[in-house]
Image (tube, rainbow, N blue to C red; front, side, top):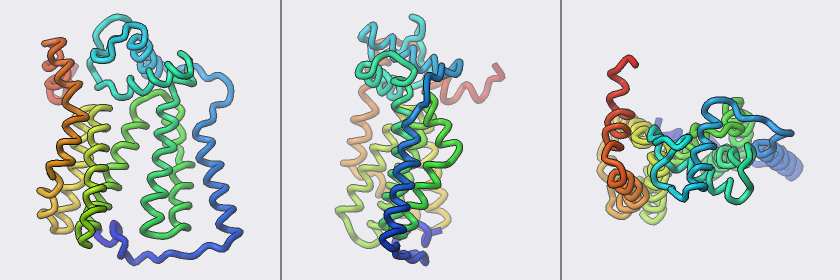
Length: 270
């Protein structure tokens, strides 16, 4: 597995001629731009899209960006990062379906950019463009990029955390401390975004993948290095304030969200 995550892999960069380079970059630009285009007016698909638009609309109407509400009732199933992003989009572009979908569309574009940047340094320009084209034209990426749901932003956060860890371990192994530290900060920020999008899964998915990789590659010694004080403080600074604010606001939140949504739901049949 190691050779597929490091710049010293068996893959070799294949040079592109000038015509092929222009053609491929142009094709990638078109494919990526289509992720942002919405032809005509497309109503919300019920129930998630409308729900994830109404909650931000109520945040804007009430000025309460701490406790999510749906039709005036508390809605604690998810953290607020996606609601905040949609609210910001609505504030700028108006309370429309198109505005509510902008964060998901930008997340889809972000996944393309992340794939290109990660692949280009390791496998060259040709592989990077092809990787971007594969992401930009993948059916699921195109679909979730057109829906106001949390899956797209969460996918970007988790993918970025995976790329950041891959970069961290290769820079750490080569002794490039500056780049390793930058990658570690990106890993923690990406995990923080994932947690603020959908809770504990933002740690379980990347953390589980890292542990499996460390076991298979026999590099468990790298795991303690992930908890460097600076990046860890950055993670906590992004995650803790809202959790403290909502817990102080509503004593019932902890049992419903932390216990119920993360643990109890898996042991009940309801």
